[in-house]
Image 1 (cartoon, rainbow, N blue to C red):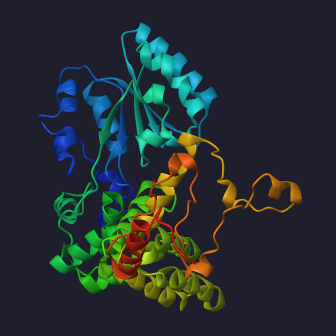
Image 2 (cartoon, one colour):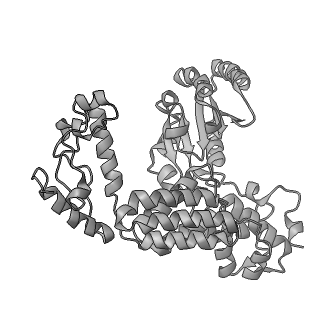
Image 3 (cartoon, rainbow, N blue to C red):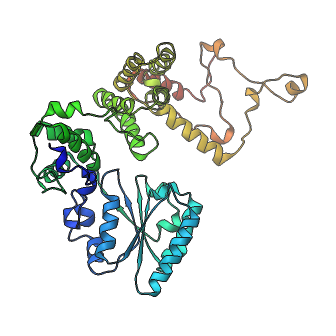
Length: 432
């Protein structure tokens, strides 16, 4: 009975698209009454701009609304389906309209799908005012858009909708009279709304799609149990090639570095649920073991490598246990980036000083001629001196330079005490 109230009138998510800017939920900073774009729209001085934000934040809806409010012709174009040929046709039509006194707003969905040379096709027409370009992207425009095009457009960051934003949208859809909304035909418990908001993952379109599915089988009230029964497979959404992927990976590594095993496990679970390759995660942890733990606990590298090798034996789902063990071990290790920092300093010195001569006494006298030239002469074998002997190892120009500066953390603290003692003896002769 519920379904018959709105069957045949299009999906609920399409019917509930905002019809004016004041109906936009969660984007008050970008399009509120005091925002730059809102004032520009009201004055008819619409600039070209990029809408950057996650799915379901209203990019297409905003572009349509803006064009309508400015009384411009709206043309929608997908970078996935179209190419430069279609752009040329749109430009020709836009020139014709402009000659008749009407501007054209070209909305390019997923504009990042165009390569940077293809994006050049928009440049002259944006510059001469033939087109007002509105691009939509889920990816960071700094990386994905042509710098020349980006410099001619404003970037509008749309924020991810919060759970309360989603609940407002759902309540509105249930109360809105039919055929646009559900007209009060169903109610929903607070738990059900919370569950729908959780499944939506910040995407209003997903939330309304889930609500419509639940309403179609509800007997007057949508409950938490009913929502669970219509939960789609893979409700946790994760784009392994997009910004969100790198944000979560970054949070995972920073949680390990910050010695928070709980946060590390949470982000690890997010990455796994999102479909990331366990091998990718093991590689990140092997790198982390050297970069961020290093000699503070040399076992970190052993654990990371052993867990990675063990995964090749057991695979999934048991392999998640090896991921968890490695992550919690790394998170609770003492931390040091001294080896990493030392390597950076050494490479900088090589780039700055070039190929300095190796001291003669460190060179191997592999032939008689080399011995005559002084190769190896004066070298003191450290084992003849109890394991250490003070002698010059660095090239002359770098004598006294220290690249490796151990911390006082964990095992590296013992290394530091020993190395400080060794460095105090530098240049002092030792008896065999």
